[in-house]
Length: 260
Ligand code: OAD
Image (cartoon, rainbow, N blue to C red; front, top):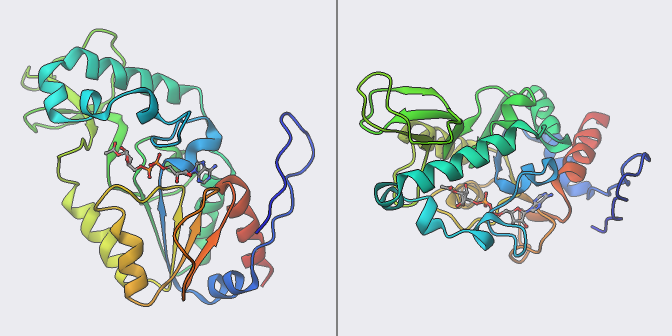
């Protein structure tokens, strides 16, 4: 699929995107759909991804210093400040047409599961409900000793004490080396095993266990459609790559599904 580039600041309508007929047919016939999203779905909102070469967060910061329990134990103030910075960044962004298309798509299917690795809450802000969050959410803090979670704070000096027990609060996100929330993980894999169509959107597919979700769906007989401007693995049977930004590809796909 070829796509014209969007002009900066242009008022014109977005370029036409050609969605292959096979994808349109599969998406129209599907009854059980899973969408798995990663940082790329929020890129057009202005939220940095992790692994894009120049702009990704992990090109500028070291995950070992900021996103591990060891880093928090060693230097809680620095880790806290990084999450405060990311929370503030989110205050100035909005959901983009990719988030909106996914929110609308859910009403087209008897079963639609939206699974995200993102912690930015933009799917919910676009109107998606029952979002399966694998890596937590920046909008919350939680007590380091598990007594509960609270709205995420943006105190410069941190981490603040837990309102219940006085121990430290930490962002309610999953760090490297930590387990994912078991309920969310189980729901995601069950949905993947049972779906007809899995959309893998804006993820490099390098972080497990989330990276295995499309593989499980494919092995269980689903068609997997990857939406990403960068090349992915070789195409294969029931494996299709729609190459382009999610904010353009997903609205185009939604339009074609509705035409049916
Ligand atoms: P990555 O930064 O690894 O990958 C982002 C993907 O989005 C890349 O494949 C890009 O090519 C693609 N992309 C960029 N712009 C896009 C656009 N406009 N439309 C569609 N795709 C686009 O982010 P994730 O795969 O989400 O974990 O990373 C997975 C996890 O690693 C994150 O949840 C985070 C990170 O470390 C934790 O913090 C636990």
